[in-house]
Length: 335
Ligand code: SF4
Image 1 (cartoon, rainbow, N blue to C red):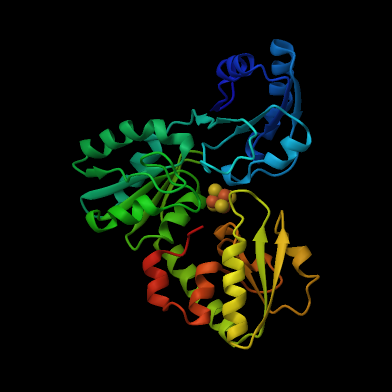
Image 2: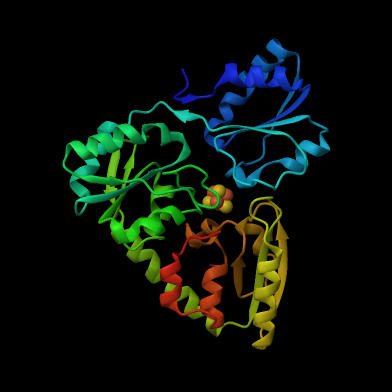
């Protein structure tokens, strides 16, 4: 049995109800191995033709709407995430299947409890574990802790949900909590640590480990400060705009380009589907890349890139429009 609930019965019922005959099936990398089985099942039970997307699917920001339209599909089934864009569709019907996790969370939450600081805990998780929030909150309360579950953000549409680029709910409650507990992957917990100024503890149900992320936060903040200083001294910039529906922000890129030009710098806008470090190497005259797409491209593993890469918000500091303190107040991770 898969460790994720792929909701096969619901998917088949939806296909029948919608009368879909040609389907594009999109799965995140961790679930791609389920694609052939799901495609066979759908064909056998409904007679619909199924095309399994073999391109990456990083988030619900990354819906294959254009590919589905070119295929003349009548349904895009997107696994692993819930709805992100409320108005971003090109008319293509989309069925979201979040793929709830069946991994146990309470054993790793027990390990995380000694790492938490203070009495009031902000509790959040990813869509895969959202259904565990009541049990986790009860366990924390049994230990004498108070629990605050943050409200939804602009892209994370459920209370207590975080996305790799949406920690707005945490920021709203941070004045009222002593520390945060994030149930989920390192990627999601690190994003929280980079967004709030309270101690952040990760409880990872996949590998059963718990850890405090304060030193990771400190290391990355120092690294980002140094990159911003380097950008201040640089003259040639490449501003990356994503083709992905939920990440595309050409207006931000144009605004940054104009601000750079006003300061006598040169800047060009680059348009890309996947931001691949090796491809950026071809732009040999560019000194600094600016990421207006997924902010995690710049923040996670910047050493993968041939040249420094800054987020849109970090560029605001490099340009002089914001102070470093203002950036930290807003949090390093914002789409
Ligand atoms: S963190 Fe990046 S990949 Fe994930 S939802 Fe946000 S923009 Fe998409």
